[in-house]
Length: 314
Image 1 (spheres, rainbow, N blue to C red):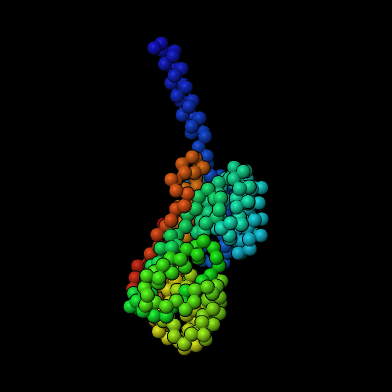
Image 2: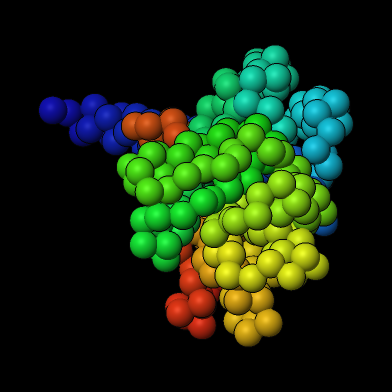
């Protein structure tokens, strides 16, 4: 081969490599829309997402907003992200189906959409806790504690995918234990402490015997415990899902013996992984499965001192 041809070939290879490097997409801006920035769970999510985004690009522009469980507000936030020309939207969806048109609009504008914590139809990727498993381990704890026999409450919540999955996981465990009688499973505690308090007050008034309660999240569990204390009802086992700072404190508190376990989530790590997978997808490396499930671990009064908690960087 003539020298000139060799030089030409080398130049072509270098040019091709350069073009490949140039085509790698950088995360220059990200829009993050989360349930409520007053909730420690979403604060930890935001911190994890921001840490991973800055690891990818120290100069990335990050816009983090809370939609405060107002779907109309979340639609507006997505429109604003599209108008701002972000590269990625990280979304904690307020509804599994309703946001699909907004998500499609963002994708049509060349924006990658990643759902985090709860699913959304049409999202490019979803990263969430394995909520079915979280419900299973929280309710298996109840079965074990009651020796497979007792009257229990499943305290439901807002019908987002995460809550539906937790309740389904719990029901599947109780269904395998004929000695467990489910008194109620359809009351909505609104995902809040006040909601849990109100629902539990009604249940305590209606049912003279309640052995255990599974609450779909920690705030509802804390409200449930408060209602039991107010009505002097002792000996109730309360479990939940989240592993939030408040439940961590309750599990260490001798004055709150009813709260016994919470199937933990890791919002910081969840958001880190969501952004990491999103950046890889922007560059053509999509995972084999569009939904990534993170396993939950049960935090109890026995192991709470070894629990990392939500806020520490990973």
